[in-house]
Every structure is written in C-alpha cells, then in structure tokens.
Length: 68
Image (cartoon, rainbow, N blue to C red; front, top):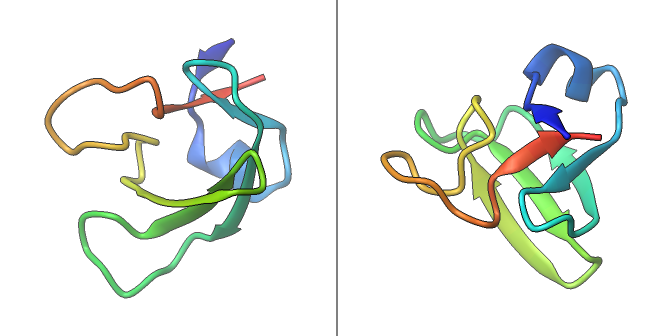
C-alpha cells in the first residue's frame, strides 16, 4: 500500500483502508472544509475523510485511506 494521493484517487485509482478494507469513493467536494471526501467502506459504512485521506484530522486510524 502507498500513501493516499487525492489526484490519483479522483482519477479512479484503487483505494483501501489501512486495515485493507475495500473502499468506494463517492464524493470529493462535500461542503465541509475539514472532511470533504465521502467514502463507502466494504459497501456498509459511510465515512468522511480529509484531503489527505485521514479519518481523524489529528491522529492515525485503521480507517485512513491508502492507495492499492
């Protein structure tokens, strides 16, 4: 896995969570300055992310996004 790259993700590159769960990115421009990305984790859980792919703005999480 590689560090999350917003540009590649917007172009359709494969993304997963740090814990290797499947991710489908839904929106990159949500009206929220801190968490503009919306994703669906394992087709069950809706999560919001920073532009750096972070689940929490100030700490690491197993739900952080990574490039496959």
